Length: 501
Image (tube, rainbow, N blue to C red; front, side, top):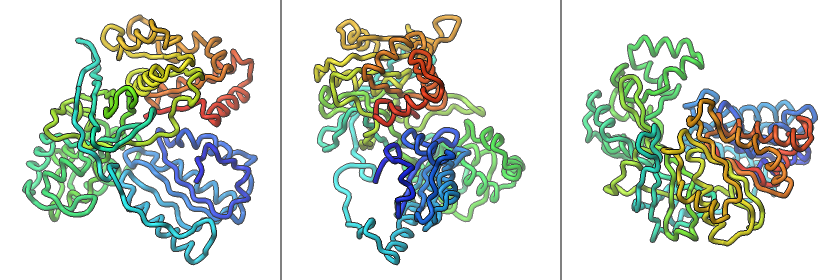
């Protein structure tokens, strides 16, 4: 197995069998480690792939309109280049286990009939210890709102004990959390159906549970998607749903999905079901959420710290909340949250403690950089550190102000640039601070600095990359193509890494 970022597309004609697994994020975009691969694959200089046997497993989320688009694009392009598809592309929604098994079984059957040294018999293995399928019931040690009185935001610093779990993590990893749905919303859903709370229904991982427990613990009642709404419309007399399904326009779907959940279907668009089992089978599995870890395991043994933006808002006459963020913020340890460590090898601080680091982390994007800096302080690294942080207001939204200002006074932070967007008439963001310091940022890069970004993928991360390209172009004296190649080289050298969501 090889990461796409490390794969040379010019070697494609030499391959015998090529299996590709890729996710999609944003507006049908490939993940960071596949960007250069996709550009090379779709370039005019991409080599022919005649004789290469391939198959694609595409990962996505049907909540978004461009479902599995990166996988679809790679699949069609390989066919254009002459490669032979040995098994049809399989598209996995967030419930990926069953589609993955289908893809895996289909490929194994092919290779049994067409043996090759590249695919020896698979060894059986058993799940040991705590992990995604066997999460650890953790205790909340501390739960603090980092925002000041009057802030429009609510950002919680949450400390979790993993003592006795055997779980280990490194800087840059994430903590996966299996949330529970709001019991009040679940009860309202059940009250609006003809089903009793104690009705037995199937659950995604096999077995059965009472309907109420299944909706609290196992099923996604927060988000809507095309498959769910289409199936619901078939069982409903709702003219609004029929119009949306028949018109089948991306804008209409997005407009309807925003700020609505299963409760809105149940109450506003009643449907007929044979039984409760048919009802829950329309729902997707409640997925764990992942949060960048904001602590060093050396500084805080047996603890994991998180920086969580708590989402609460009103829409369509109801108060809403993020499933996991409100679950954590309101947590009282009555039901310990179940957690696991999600390794993220692509987002690690430099192995060389003397290498310079540039960190861009507005809002909750500060999380991993708190861990980076704690680790550097613990290891007494001599590398220069530069942090860009931003939020709406300094007085209410300067997350971890005491620690950050302490690191600045003590010299751990060589440079600190703050962007509080609403403290002046003209909005100022982290990318503006980067451009203001472009000449120095370029010198840091030329001196071997690692460049990290964490936070919002849809806007901030794109604006930061544009600013980075502009800095390389202007202060490096390069044209647009040369600047793009420079940034690609940073990425390939693992000196440009992003943890975006």
